[in-house]
Structure formats: structure tokens, C-alpha cells
Amino acid sequence: MLPSRDDALAALLRRDRRVVIAGMIGVAALAWGYTIVLAGHDAAGHAAHMGPMLDRPWSAADLAMTFAMWVVMMVAMMLPTAAPMVAALVGISRSRHARSEPFTPATAFVAGYLIVWTGYSLLATLAQWRLHQAALISAAGVSTSALLGGSLLLAAGIFQLTPLKHACLRHCRSPLAFLLTEWRPGAWGALRMGLKHGLYCAGCCWALMALMFFAGTMNLLWIAGLALLMLVEKALPGGRQVGHAAGVVLVLWSLHILATAALRS
Image 1 (cartoon, rainbow, N blue to C red):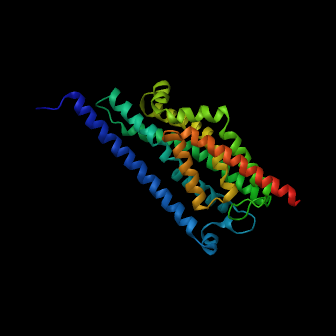
Image 2 (tube, rainbow, N blue to C red):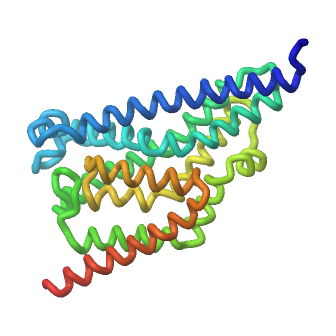
Image 3 (tube, one colour):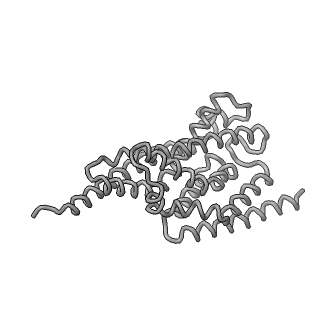
């Protein structure tokens, strides 16, 4: 008995999703591998591989290497959180055009998404440079100021509880709703959708990512913890409640740091 058209389409959808998700996992795994290698270096290794780790004025090469570090770290942390959206995109592409190739729109969508986070990486690089110049963070990107560290925690915690955060998170948590309202055909349309989703994602996560300047830009446990929190927020049931609880914890933590610093001054 020959498979029905619906069965054949379902088989194609399963294959397409497996291929796309496997590709995203592979890219994210490479980025995580490189991030782990960087984080695992001792002080001498950092000095050899990353000029900004030295307490000296930055050169153009230092800026470029720090920018590359941020880009790779963004891919490692943020690409897995986009997997549900890309899987939904592949499904809709195949359903609307059964004979078309869904991988080109998926690639274009991911490219648009990563363009936004590359822009964020540039801003983070410039922020790290200026904070380092002002002696507010160490060469390893760790806050040296209780005021800065407490303020970063407070800002991130408060933002977790705001309507803007919840609005951006809603788009990230509802792939089908986003794609059905924002659908654009073709590769250029997918690129535009990826850019827009990237903006929502950055709007949702920018404050949490800024916490890298609290515990260190190469603190592997901190990187993994933030990545896990953002993945839970976007992809798992109860994610919004988890993010809300994290915001309360961050606010309380910040108040403790700021109050302790005020008593010591």
C-alpha cells in the first residue's frame, strides 16, 4: 500500500526538522567547544590568546579578538534558544510548499537572527573596552566595583519583571504565532523574519547578557547558568515564572551587595 500524501509530507517534515536541528546543534556545539577552551586557559593562556586579558591599554587587535569572543559566545548561548522557532519555520515552509527546499529559508532566518546578536556583540565589546579603561572591570571582565556589580544585578532583576520583558518573551515562546503573523516568503523574507525575531530575543535577554560583566566574561559556570536560564524562559513550560523568580533573586542579591558596600564606605 502506497503512503498517502499526508504521510509523505509528515515524513518530509520529520526529516527536515532533524536535519535543521542537527545542524544547529553542531554549530552550537562548536561554539561551546571554543568557549570552553577559552575559559579553560590559565592566566598565561589568556594572555597569549586574548590581549585584553592583560592590564594594559587595548589595541585594535585586542578589540577584534574580544569581539570574536563575544560573537562565538553569543552563538553558543543564543542559537539553542532559537531552535523551536526554526523548527516551526521549517514545518510551515514545507507545509506551504511541499516541493520546495526548506533549508534555504531556515539558513536565512538563522543568519538574520545571528546578525542581531553580532550587533549586540559589538556593543558588548565596546562596553567592555570602556569599562576596562575606567578600571570598573578586571582584565578578565569581572566587575571590580560593588556599585557597578550591584547596579547590573538590580537592572537585570527589575527588567525581568517589566511588561517589555514579558512582551518580548511572549514572542519568543510562541513560534507559530510569530511566524503566522510575521510570515514573509522566500529567503529574503526569512532573513527579515530572523532579524525581527532576533530583535525580540535581544529585547528579552539583553539585561541578562549584561550580567557577564558582573561575574566575568569568561566565567564558564556563569555563561552556562545564564544560557540555561534563557533556554528555560523561552522553551519550557513555566519558563515565564522561572524568569520572574530569577528577577526577584537578582533584585535581592543586588540590594545585599549595595547595602554591604554602603555600610563599608
